[in-house]
Length: 176
Image 1 (cartoon, helix red, strand yellow):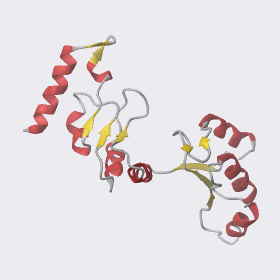
Image 2 (image 1 turned 120 degrees about the vertical axis):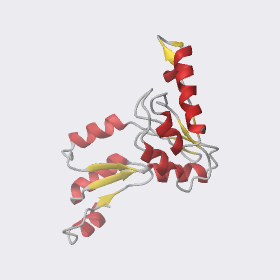
Image 3 (image 1 turned 30 degrees about the vertical axis):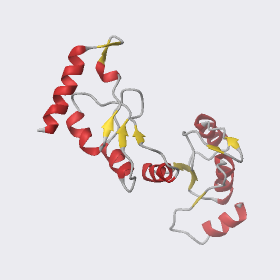
Image 4 (image 1 turned 180 degrees about the vertical axis):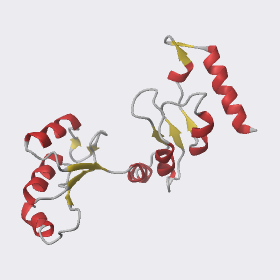
C-alpha cells in the first residue's frame, strides 16, 4: 500500500492525496500516509462505535489514534471521518428508523447545517438529540422533524415548570 500510495503522491505535485486502509485501520493508514508523503487519511469510524457480523465489535479509540499520529511524527497528516450526509445515508440504508443529530456535548445544540445535511436523501425523520431550548427552538425546529429535550427543561437537576413553559411557548410561536 505504501508503494502504491507513493506512486500516486510523487507525480501529483499539486493534489492533496489521502489513504484509507480497510477495514478501519487508521493506524495503518497513518503509517502508509506518513511513509508515502500523503496529506490525509480517511477513517470510516473515528468516534462512532462499529461492528460487523463477521468480525464483531471494532475497537474505536480516537485518543490513541491522535497519540499514535504524534508518536510517529505525522501530526501534519489530517484525519478525516465520513460526513454527516454519508453517515445518514448509511444509517438509512441499514434501515434506521430515524437519525439523531446532537451537538458536541450534553446540552449543546447541533448546528443547522448538520441537521440539513443529515436530511439530504434521508427518507427518515431527523431528530435533534441535544441542546434544544426556548432560545433556539425557533431556529432549529425548522431544520428537523423533532427533538429529544432533557437538559433544557431542568434546573438544579429537576424538571422546572418555567423552562417547560418557555419551550412550549417558543414552539407555539412556530405554529402560528
